Image (tube, rainbow, N blue to C red):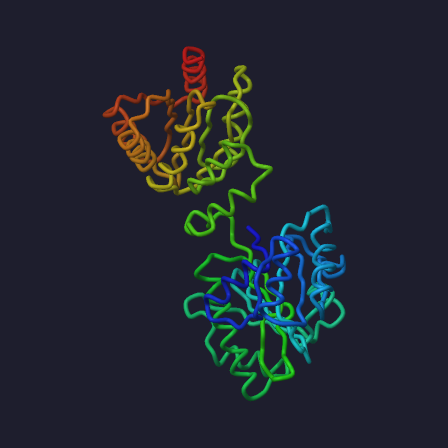
Length: 381
């Protein structure tokens, strides 16, 4: 999930990072009010979640209140890559003498977090890397220790910083990594990280993207993430609110499998027998009882799902763990929605025993399981 610039800066400010004085405005009058409060000149920055904002005219400076009014009015009527501008960030204008770049993200090829820094901020990082590869400095980070300050100071030296700025840069780098780690971010970036005429380092622009699959761990972002899923269906939003990702397929039989291939094959068998799956939900290999219980909950709660088919091929995933997850949800929610379970593989007998105790019969054949869930749906319509 992407955050708007002002949201990213609010997070960074809470971690002690230096950001410009300013506030968000939802109307022209609010923009003028903020400018009066913080003093002129100011920067007016359209808040959108797409790139290329500056080139599209979404960032302007204003030296008078009349300019604040006319420019903010123009920004509110702007569309940037089809995204409407619903808010404008009004900030005290910085006297910038140099622009740097700093980001913490994941290097998937190395399987490690990486800090990227450059003495050439304020331009597209892709263009920067292409045209001036020598300006890019990378520091791969051992997650066991995070960024150690002396490592960040070495990076600061390589991009030309000295003395007090070197220390300040190191402090910013350490705090940005802390945000990356604690908030499950996939990107924490400042471009530019500005050096002012007073020699201060200020985060002039900010980006913060949170890993969607980790949002369930961050209650503070969940309401926000649901608002930013307009393209999702009601079932997908319900699942996401429970920390589960699924694909709504529009039918009435909820399908859970452990592995994408097995789940797709289960949907194929359902389709072969004339039924339609409500969703694609893969719990993956090695899912614990708690993870399985979380996956099952939205399907129980959503009314369009008339019955649930669980197809588990126990390898890494243990059938008894799956059975304990089902039992936990069954006892917690006292649900009566028809449930068909196919269990086969590791600890199969123990899993079957656990489910028999709560009155759920299991199948070892997928054909038999599918025929059973179709009968359940037919009698439940």
